[in-house]
Image (cartoon, rainbow, N blue to C red; front, side, top):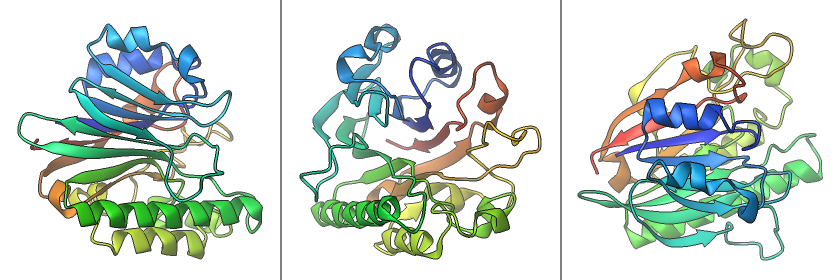
Length: 260
């Protein structure tokens, strides 16, 4: 089962690029972030015509997450537990039933957190702690699960072309990386680094200052896998070429292959 995560930076802006990538890459499941659309305005027919089941958790003009799946989706829930007053559309869960295994999908768009320090950074760290608690709960249920999306976290210096430029940014601050490490320390596997080592692998290039042309990128889109899910992992890749195509997102898809 091929499962991808892709921050599309607006479904309206990516109305041609996203279907083009889906047709080329043919993922069984795509977890989308920043759809920037309320649920009723999401162009689901484009994806249903391609054989995808569509579930969204939208918000006008900002945020928003979605799941596209060629397999049945069960027990769909929206919103990250732990704060009943949090109205930002950043999290969606569903169980996908493959040929041999069922996997719990957790699609997320983690807060950016800038400017930091400040209230937005406090919200980011609190959100990450809620995510950790959700991971603990899922681990206790002993079902294979993954948490994938735009984490807005640069885990290590090798995940940025110019790490020194990010030292005081919310994406690379010590507290952010420590919170990410606490997630991993629950026993989760970071899929890309389980397969690929070394610098020079990025999933985001800013639109400004010629970042793409200079390969001035960062790696902030991640798959974290439970032990049961990690046992199924056969591959993890970044579709870097998507950034050089017409009207691209500033992110590119990252995908895994599971023996599921």
